[in-house]
Amino acid sequence: MTALTFTKGHGTGNDFVLFTDPEGTVDLTPELVRFLCDRRFGIGADGVIRAVRSRALPEGTDVLAVEPEAEWFMDYWNADGTVAEMCGNGVRVYTHYLINEGLVAPERSDTLPLGTRAGVRDVLVGAAGYTVDLGRWRLGKERLVASQGLSVARPGLGIEVGNPHVVTVLADQAELDGLNLDVAPTFEPVPAAGANAEFVVPAEQLLVNGVAHITMRVFERGVGETLSCGTGAAAAALAFRHWGGDQMPNSWSVTVPGGRLGVRMFATEEGEHVSLTGPAELVYRGTIDLP
Image (cartoon, rainbow, N blue to C red; front, side, top):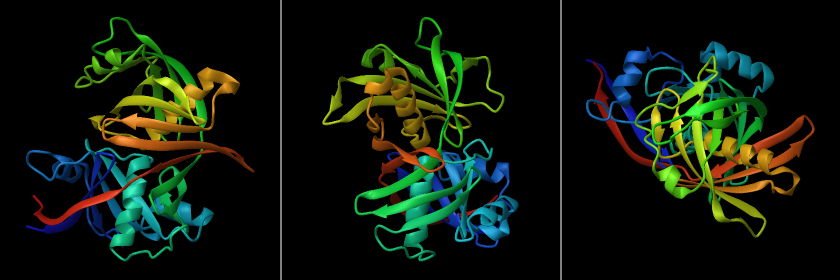
């Protein structure tokens, strides 16, 4: 029996099992991921993040062709054993893990480039957490979203932030609280690769000192309801700004069951980017015997 040394971490309650495998020698299979993420028989998490050098994976080699400084690749897997393009909370926790393990040593206010299946993601190391440049975003299709707790399907807006989302606005907090996200929401038409489903309500006072405030619950593709979703928070803010028009700000505060995240839209030479700011915590280290 082989033992795996791991670290458990989370970003606003979105939790992960992290381990270091620089040369990609661990046979990380869907079955192993499901075992590690099992909250009864394994460690328990929303996903697994392997710290692997970019040159050790084909996807990482593609990243290095774009950004040679992206030494480390975030090999992220959902709890159901499927691979995912990116995770906004995960990349912050991953950065914190790399620093804590001594694998990178950025100074505060330095930017660290990391490889992901959605491309290079630059992470700014700050005093109050980490800020991830999620890159360019894309407006997707409108879809009808049905969920237990809603009497009728509601319109949702597709937003691509490296991974796919469908954002639906609800009437009030009571309607948001009344959702049963133990059962997966459904989409019409069905997205080819699936999508995360975000349900959002505005705060009673939407704008405070130039920052817009919204509250969100999320059902993550391949996971279920989670306490937080970083890219989902960005998608929710982008959708609200799209609906609100020119009077909407570019700075947003998104409350999730696990805490609060900051989202900001900003112009770059290649088009508008969106960033995500929030905390990252490492909870404990351990060793587990693998089946």
